[in-house]
Image 1 (cartoon, helix red, strand yellow):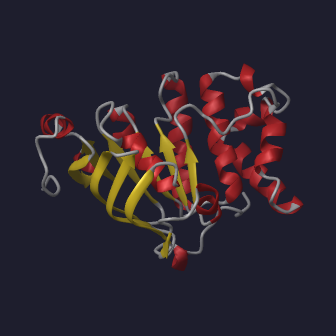
Image 2 (cartoon, rainbow, N blue to C red; image 1 turned 120 degrees about the vertical axis):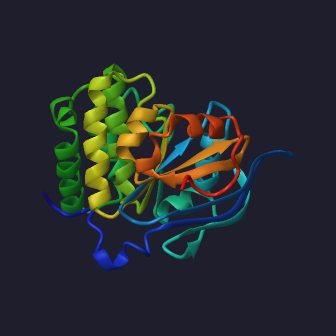
Length: 255
């Protein structure tokens, strides 16, 4: 496989996402309070919490789509105050819950052509080969209209398109929602491959077993605040997790 997405080992730390005291707002309504995160390259952080806890708002704030205050750095470069399209150029890619980066009327190939349009011909071909290796079904469905794909196929395509910017930080909002369990293994293997290439991944997810399989670490958000954080291996403590979902814990990790 080619190495279009490959990060040099020495650059893994520089590709990390660092968030300090992030507060987010919809108009005058504050929805996030003092969020701190740190995600190294090659690491997947699972962002957990009940519906309405603030997970999507946090991803939106990182991508520049939700008004916020605080520090957001990628590779040591401050992104706060920068427009969403400029954040994308600096390495932040968001795959929204509704797969809003897809063009339903275009074929799979045409969607990929649009997403990879800023790459050189050889680089685009190499990246297309890499995404086909992660998601072989997309190669089979190359001439299919995007709107006719299954939910799982659309999710795979949405992730593939996000890679067109060669991000260092990949934000995923509820990627397993509404999908057949058979797709979960494909997504898990794709995330492992992307981590091997040095990407920092933030995964907002309701499916706790899937998150537990993927996560190197996790954060639980409740009421717009971090109520619990810990290592992915600690996601088996169901009682403490449920307390955190209800906002009953506000300190440190689980050790």
